Image (cartoon, rainbow, N blue to C red):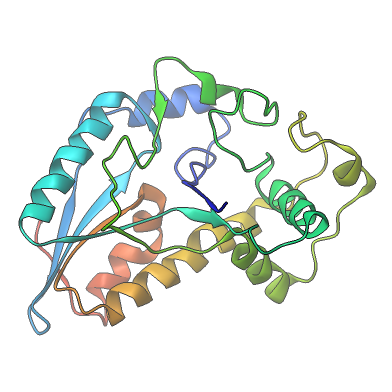
Length: 239
């Protein structure tokens, strides 16, 4: 069965001090940003998500998305698919280990208590991690994102095959991960920038006139806002 997981690293792992970071970004309300393209009569409402936050934040997102749907908006949201359905067990295992080498932890449901590789601050009881349920994503909303295999293929196409070391192969997937990871610059390239390209192209080619974009804040602050306002012809209505 295919599993759809929300990548939570985008707004979290850009800092080595998660407690300080949480203190800075914690919020009860999401600050949406609206763009309008007069020529296309197309409106974008951007939801820069903080993936680890207090429940009130996600409830605010849920309410605002509901209101936008009532006004005819279509929701595009992030969610990296783990596409193991048609793969053999050895291939699936290799894919998981390559993703772990890229991220530094085994990519599973964040609530998996058996996964000791997950960062400790995932268990911070003052905060909860974003899920599709917590923000009210439904079956009519559209997932615009890569699969795990696409992310790995993207990396290997540009930088060569990910070589798994003896440490990578011998460390059980859910054990604490202490092997060497890939340079962070590559993580940003394939986890943030390549996915930004996919989001941008989806908006550009979409037949929908009103779109709500629900993605990690790092996506918007790393190029998307600028790209919308550049040749794409959108005006920032909130400023």
